[in-house]
View 1 (cartoon, rainbow, N blue to C red):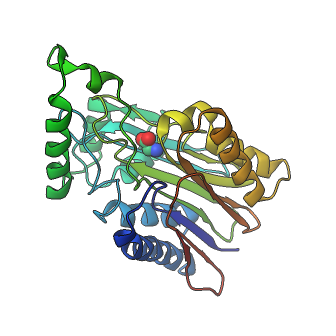
View 2: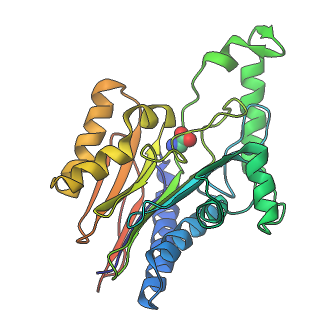
Length: 304
Ligand code: GLY
């Protein structure tokens, strides 16, 4: 069985961007599915889908990542294999084009699971990833606007004001993720993000935390999106994958996880899940989340 499911981030996508977001997830799903058709693995397919979305500046991952309070780009990503529980992740990583590719290197080339900050960047250079500035002019303009807005508040200390420390910026839509299933039965989940706009430097979201934003088991894989602080407190991806393993349908498992988050914390999120038999589930409490699904014999089915 071959199947791919891809998301482009839960949140309030402006109507004017719906078409481009759907085209973006469909293109990523096609790129991944093509790899499966050429006897490639779920691991290669998942990475290809996430990289296609990281390279599309519409999404908040890789190119198009949002910026920290001090104007830097710190990205998080994770990839996980269901068959072996092998996993690699990077957090608050600066200066690379495709964080998901670095996450895969962490899985394949080290005994660790998660590398963060400067150490992650040094590891990326060691692995041959060149220095790359992913900040787009559009993101820089948005940052300047937000920075001026926040800085007009009363100064607190060290140049920060109360709003900078206590306001939780709304997560823009655009975190990206994929779950791939190949004919050997291998399931791989991957997620990548720039996080939330104007986050404090060093803030890490749910994406690189196994079980929160990304998880895979022999039964299923899941990728979550939305406000990371809510997703990590409810272990959204693990909760969903575990429920599928216990016999709950993927759609029901995804919906139950989102319902729990809505009931308890009320923060925005979305999740995609793919089971080993090729069934999938999609759930969100945000207004929109572009998703594309491809299985044997069908063109991408898209929804937002
Ligand atoms: N879900 C992406 C983040 O909050 O970092």
